[in-house]
Length: 352
Ligand SMILES: Cc1cc2nc3c(=O)[nH]c(=O)nc-3n(C[C@H](O)[C@H](O)[C@H](O)COP(=O)(O)OP(=O)(O)OC[C@H]3O[C@@H](n4cnc5c(N)ncnc54)[C@H](O)[C@@H]3O)c2cc1C
Image 1 (cartoon, rainbow, N blue to C red):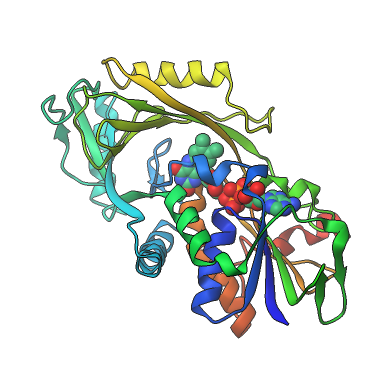
Image 2 (cartoon, rainbow, N blue to C red):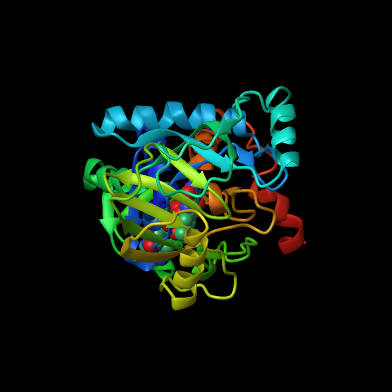
């Protein structure tokens, strides 16, 4: 008998698989990536700052420290490069923003806001509209999610079953789970927004947010290892290739790119760069955002061998490594799940 069945094959499932592997927890992963696209379209950015209020993103210190350790370890295991450290470039619209940046860079945000106010230099940022001055966010970067998932799938190939999980085939006994021919002690569901079809966890309060993103090709830009953020972002990927995004929509939960989405991104881009480009890809996915913007992780209130790992929302890259570790320590060492992410915060509203 194995320890866990993991259902899903996106970021959440693969991060858990690596944590399980590191702790010798035996698992099988059952997933059908064709059902949902989110992890494969994400830009994979982590950003410690909430620009709207110029505050620190929730638990940024802990999450960023853990993500660097975790993905670096995965780079060794998978023998590939996965993360790129980048500065996020934030143009200032008015004098007040500059003053606030300077103040906070010398106070509680000193770890993340570079105190040097940069004069935008059109040699380093050819064809970019950066306003006269900008600030740089440090300790940010991005994960190449497509490579992470592809290489992880190859690495775990003997433990992956590529199929759609059929909930009606699941038998739950007191001390074991039986799914077709597989016997496991536990099962953990990582289905992203498709958890709505899971009869055991369809009550978790998700507020899925569709997102669209484009990939462009141009040889008229020259910045490298940066993310330009101006009510939308542009990030260099490889030579002449850039990702641009993203949109947010709450009324459509299909993975289909739309004309409106494309127009919205082009409008954002018009305010960031002023050169010709060719669109080489346009993708969409649905972020598994939660109603209270925190992950939703933990045990089913009735079936103790059923677990959920979901609600990664817009920040899966930052959240998954830390809370994957938290889950493994909860499972192996009976450590507490962080109360803000524990699914038990919703027990009362659904199982009163
Ligand atoms: C346009 C866009 C840009 C984004 N940019 C960023 C970013 O820059 N940084 C960041 O951190 N996050 C970003 N995100 C969010 C990020 O993609 C998510 O946080 C993360 O990918 C969620 O991972 P997940 O594994 O929980 O869900 P998913 O990626 O949705 O994975 C769920 C998996 O489960 C599978 N599945 C579901 N049901 C079944 C079933 N019954 N049987 C078999 N398989 C099943 C699905 O097919 C899928 O493979 C972005 C998202 C979008 C859409």
